[in-house]
Image: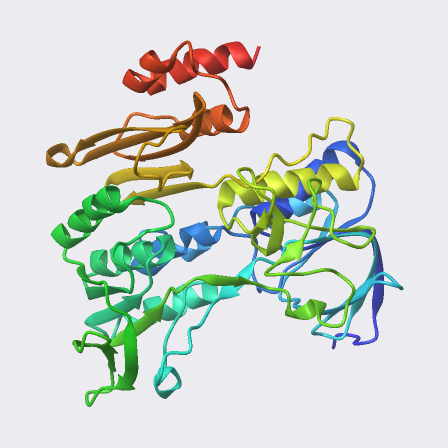
Length: 427
């Protein structure tokens, strides 16, 4: 039986075990080989990436093969890994966190990388039926088990999680309907032309899209399933209902603390929170933006890894630390054998006096490419089935490389020109 009064001590305490937490752990160990590190996660399993969950749902990836690290990894780095340990509170004066088990952990330096929970809209009737979300491995396994009795499913949402989930439902043999309130899907990542190309591919693979009308009411159906009434008056029925309507940073355990929060935990360019010896990174962190002076949440895998690495380096005062350049966004979307991504100001559609938009749109070959420039510097990219390197393009954006002398060549051959530029910049 676990001692609920147990108090343990550690130099570095990392709450959260996905990309941000792991990047911080590795940055710490590079500089401090002997300092005690404890990593805590509320989930009762080894670390994994939430991006893999739709493929667990479809059965394409086995649940036991998704882990980012195994126990031997933590043993090798002398890290205490505590799974199934939800954090319930923080005492900043005495520098300890409390766990749901009743245990307390004293820390010298604390990283909060607790991620985000599903945001549940207050649809009329939402509590009248069981619905599912996809945020954890437990969610994915529960949904996969539901497939045994289901033939159809409704997904509500317009983002990457919603699209990935609908794709994997269809590939699992279910009749999938995707309800999107706005006029286009993926509105935060792609413009209308690109979104319509993606939507066409989804339709060709059997996904029904109900676009441009919000949810008016949700109710049980006579056969034990669910019924969604749209604002347009249309009624859609299915066996299962999934909500993929966004996320909210997991910060409830901070109630009563002096850590400043807005939508997430407010941090500076080194991922430091508003109180001493506390950092935050990943989906829970509200960090400086790249294109504006405000602070924003950018819930993407690359962003989480960068923020986690910076936080870890700052925790050990690594002399190689370079401050966070700001959230610029990189979203990769692979679907039905096609490949897409968006980066930076990707939804800009028209040229202005100081912005130039260069677009290649080939619907017959299902290819789309858009480059957005401001003052001869790349500020945004979106692509579907185009030969581009997102990593290089992101570097060009964040380094604010002046492309005036090579822009003609860059727009006609961005992959080759981008590689040539970066080979010179990385020397």
